Length: 369
Image (cartoon, rainbow, N blue to C red; front, side, top):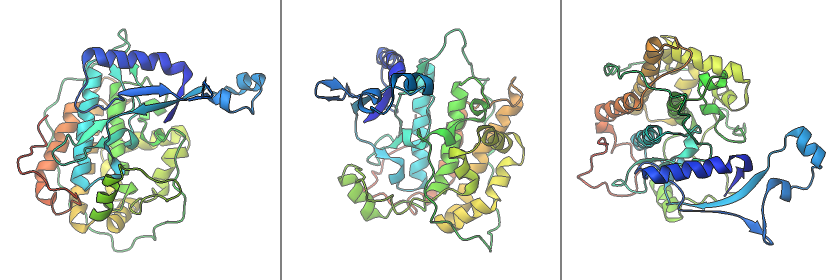
């Protein structure tokens, strides 16, 4: 269920019709049934259900009118139930391919976040999908944003950062911070600064999904829990609390959810456009604490490599764009190629650090699109 903005419903219908006309994609999940929820033969709306506002207050305060809708789509696995780092990376890769297809047919998603990426149910399935086109729009034909020519594939860097011996105690008492939409932490620095939203901003949002993933979890859930959640259809009971492996973000990143917009934009801008931005992230106390407390030691350098190489392609894109660093311009193929390289370099660790409760078929090639 979701409360849909009444003013966007016509655009949402147009986007879905546009997608239907061009054909669906294996890495994009769309509802096969959507209906407005009714009560006593009346459609449920925020202005109809919430009676605490006078008409004058609605106009003065800009209260949004939203319709409660029920959508039914194919069951997939939320990211929080990932089997291992490699499983998540494959999921991110699949969602990028889905986003690339939407871009190619003239649809801009505009709401990339961890919650809008889902994973395959079994190892032989597609491992990643993009969902939720509620904020999507059709590309403005008179203002196209074309990618830069694909640059040579960059060298894959391997990091060997020393372990930190003294770390601050983790803060386990603070509540998780989230914005109403749950997507603010993933917005590109260009959009935060008031720039026009393009497909490149969405691709940059995937970068923040990747970075924040490692702060969000202490490894995957144990195999029995993953098996049980699969059997239960990934239904999370109200009042049962958050899953045991979820963690609070450090203050530096928790502020991305509810901090001052330009300050967040500047922090992201510096991390991407500074040649040492990625190194400062992986050498920070927050990142060292994250690795030491949440992830097996043998995965520390692979995770560092993943972050450094991801930020490097975004840094390189700012050196080549006509925008002179005012936005990133990373193509889907650049990001996907980097993820493929990482999966290949560290393929020997996948089974060792996977809590997949299902047997992996022998003849599965995940890096072919």
